[in-house]
Length: 106
Image (cartoon, rainbow, N blue to C red; front, side, top):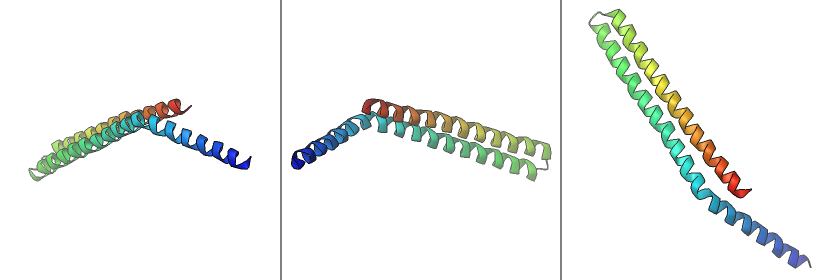
């Protein structure tokens, strides 16, 4: 009797594992896509920050402090926007993927 109960418990575990694996294919694709968006946003933001910093330094060297401040501000603003957009889009896709995975399991 105990042996039969152990076998049923093992079959339930195997069934749950199978469901998790089947559900995880779409889940991991969504998570990977979200992670990619976060990375793209961070990279794009870093590029804009570097571009704004370089322009600002160029303006400082040529004794144009107002233009330097504008360049720094533009670079920081663009970087913040890009990082924010990438993070929000990526987090949304990750949450969507996890939601789909949970939905398939339940």
